[in-house]
Length: 103
Image (tube, rainbow, N blue to C red; front, side, top):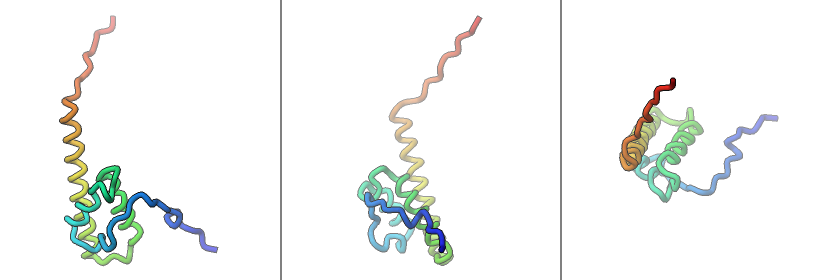
């Protein structure tokens, strides 16, 4: 008997990307996956969804579809980076601890 894959048991019900989202252009995919409606925990959650889809679709993806999905990953990654930078600058610069000489 064939062993079942772990992904067959995934039953996450918290987020649902719109039907046919992964067949659209990269900008639309990235924008939708970064939205609060689809990814309530932020764009990183959308990135995990996109990676999961790419990994599960695997060999069934055409080269052009895979390229478009990789572009969506790059756009989403850029959005995550910008969001992290905004959070970092909102908190202010990190202060370095002063080093005290030990004697």
